[in-house]
Image 1 (cartoon, rainbow, N blue to C red):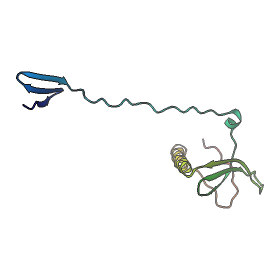
Image 2 (cartoon, rainbow, N blue to C red):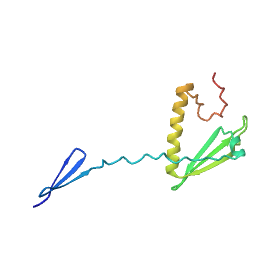
Image 3 (spheres, helix red, strand yellow):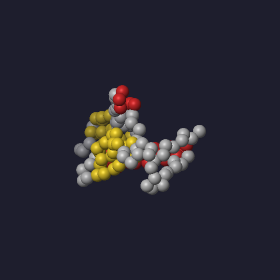
Image 4 (cartoon, rainbow, N blue to C red):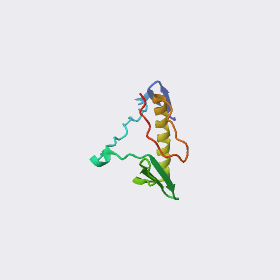
Length: 130
C-alpha cells in the first residue's frame, strides 16, 4: 500500500496504513534577514576639506573616461587656472550627472531658480539670497 500524504494547516501527515501515521510540523519559510547596507567611512584630509572655488568647468571625454576640469577665472582676467581635474568612468560620470541634477532640483525647490549668465559672458559671483 502506497502511503497517503496530505497537509492540514501547518502539519504534514503521512498514513502508512495498518494504524501507522506520521505527523510533522511544517516550518514556514522565514524571510531572509534584512542586512543593512555596509556603511562607507569617508576620510577627508584638511587640505581637501578646505575645498577649491571654481567658477568654470571644462568637460572632455574619450572612449573610456571623462575628464572634468574645475577652473577659477579671476574677474577681468582672460586666463583661467585648472584647480582640480577629476577623471571618471562613463558609468560613474552618468551617476554623478544624475545626482547633480537631483541636487539642483532640490536646491531650486528650497531657494528658488538659479540665475544663469548669458553665453560668452565672464562668470560673476552670485549674491546669497536671503
